[in-house]
Length: 189
Image 1 (tube, rainbow, N blue to C red):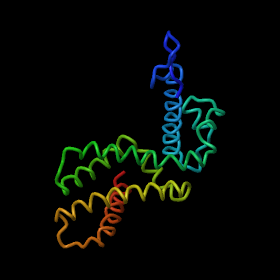
Image 2 (cartoon, one colour):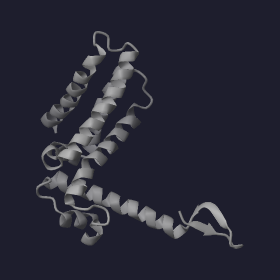
Image 3 (cartoon, helix red, strand yellow):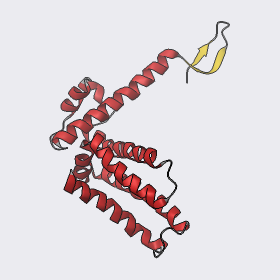
Image 4 (cartoon, one colour):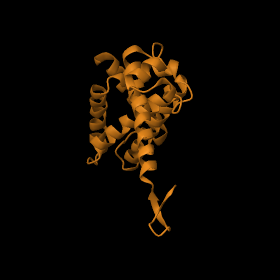
């Protein structure tokens, strides 16, 4: 971190030069624009028809700048679903934050998933095509989703809210719920 120099020549600890901060903020903003543009392009045209040229044009960023953020188009694809998945989880967490009951949290979270799809309809296509076009991203996303469900169901089980189920059966419930979301999305979107 570059330190600011005070008028007397000493360094002010922890203070970052304003130019460095703005540059870092611009870099974050540019990367975010590329992710958002990729989501829109892939969501509309699919992974197979997406290109760096289409993504950078949508982001209004020079093609060469793309490679400052991603090594290749596939590198971007490998980051796209996990980043959108984090966005989804943050959206759901915000909705369930005030609720303490496990079943109510699940219902709210389930509805929040579909609200997220209404706001980010491109997510559905990205998720469903990722298994073929970005298998690492798909694997990482599904693992992240399953782990989140696992933590929630483990807490519910410990509180006695899943009577009739053994702890070893929770994984089946997790993947049943993930599949239900996917197939309901498929049917109604």
